[in-house]
Length: 401
Figure 1 (cartoon, helix red, strand yellow):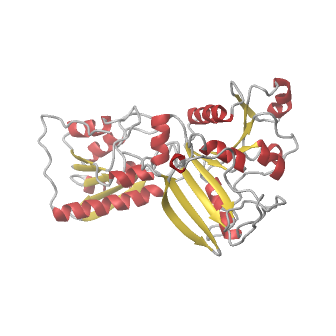
Figure 2 (tube, rainbow, N blue to C red):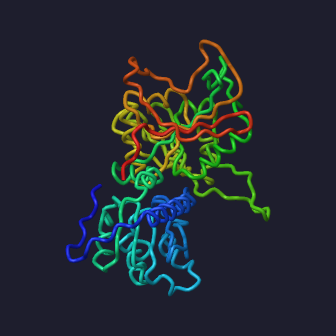
Figure 3 (cartoon, one colour):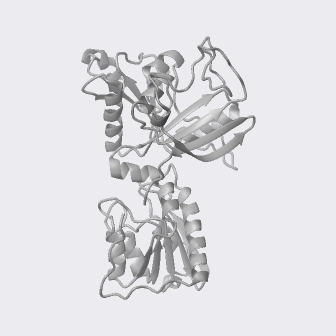
């Protein structure tokens, strides 16, 4: 997005010298690291960090810690030992400060009222109620504004938020575990467990920060999964760590529905269940499931691709930012072909080999006939987990600020 035009009555801010630019980048990187700590706690809001500095010294810092709680700028101002030191300081913020009344007052007002002289912003916020308005308010108040420092890093951090705001659909994370030879089950269908305890714990941590876990009836019938985040970790005082959020279990139902006695339905008091059903599902067959507490979204047809599009749009309207695919190869294939709807892949590579010409791989369906049609991804992270590997890829097109 283009920068908001500066106020013509205000002189252009001086370009920082080399030492100043180095310090600016250091402070912004720290702000990005702080922002990351809000992951799983702040959505549907973006992750935001803020650092305050004066005379070459960091004097305050903070980040948006929880949805509905104080924003990063306010947290940083509150961290000051003396509020008067905010006067004439510089604020480094990973995303344009808000200028509207939401669950909290505008952050631009907090910065202006504190006497902040200079604000360095990584990227503007495409949210319609902000979208350059925060930067303009700061300029009109005589605050020196710099926009674009580490913009690409900030956009990468908040890629899920940016996608939902711009497209209306959530960020899709596909997860699967497979053997070294690319199998997700043996020829007889056995799949538990391909990876070790550490890798499986990582999956539960991922479940604990997403808004929804998507699966299909094939997986529900064959595995009878619970699809809840079960965290065995404890704090230093022995207190059990609760999930950041409770993900909705979403089941795509073209022709069949979950059994009322399935683990999904029997644990509905622990986590919600949403059934995305086709037009072939009879309303009378849904009665017992809705009576038990399941929500239903009805699609206009039974075409897998159209059901996926309709389902994702519905989840986006529910302000869901991150959704996770834990499904069989057929449904996974429908998310990837003919149109790739996967933004991020978490691949867990187990230290075993299954073999077998008929042993399933993670991606089924029709697949791509031509290599040029296949989607490409960027390698983001590789982590060893005992004898297993977790490999994270993201879409080959980086998000733009």
